[in-house]
Amino acid sequence: MTTKFERMLCSHMINQKKPFEENVQATEDDIRKCLKFCWNMTYGAHGEHRDHRTGGVKKRNKEQIFQDIFIGKMGEVAFYNWCKKRGKLEISEIDFDCFDLGKWDSSDFILTDNNNEKIKVAVKTTKDFGNLLLLEVKDWRVTKTETKDEAIYIPNKDKDGRGFYDYIVLCRVKTNLKINPQSLTEDSIEVMAKSLEVKLQVVGMIKNKELAEIINSGKYKIYQGDTLNNSTIMDADNYYIQSGAFVLPK
Image (tube, rainbow, N blue to C red; front, side):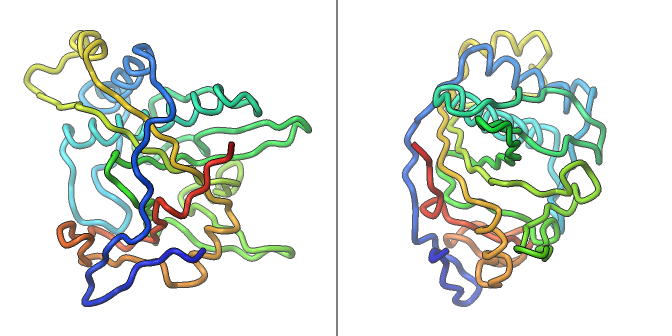
């Protein structure tokens, strides 16, 4: 990987961007399912999502969590619909099951190729103007095997697959979603789904090998308290990959 920031006075500027270009669509039913999932994981109290990032100190309220979950789930919709449109590999279904705090599935998707080989994929999502994949330093480590180094997602190290993903995919979501907790109800989600604007982009993907190289290099870090683009104060230590470094297969 040749893309990196310059770290000067703890201030970082993105220098390899990829523009937002919608390349996959969401249906009204996709949006409705994602909104209901967000409701169940927050105000509906059927599941629970943590209010802070690993190593972070900022706390999120339910409104912020709802919006973040929506962005993340729509990113999964983006990748799922992109794979279906591409039609080259079978893909597992989107998981809308709700989990208690500290519990989650071991991967976002499993792809199956023509030789029945399984490919594990983790989908990471940011807003349409985002140009970074950020991975919390405390969540990742590199494990050496006999033949290669593997990047491992530590919270899943004891689950099926050991926290290993063959690919990390970056998606972006543009939406006009705004949450008013006073007027938000499970029934109002039906109305919201009909009028909500959502545009999706699958930015690209990197191999596990590339992620391991990034972690091992020690060059691709933003630290807690650092400033990003002269405005955003980082809440936790993160590895980063700029959007321009991601490759989208044809």
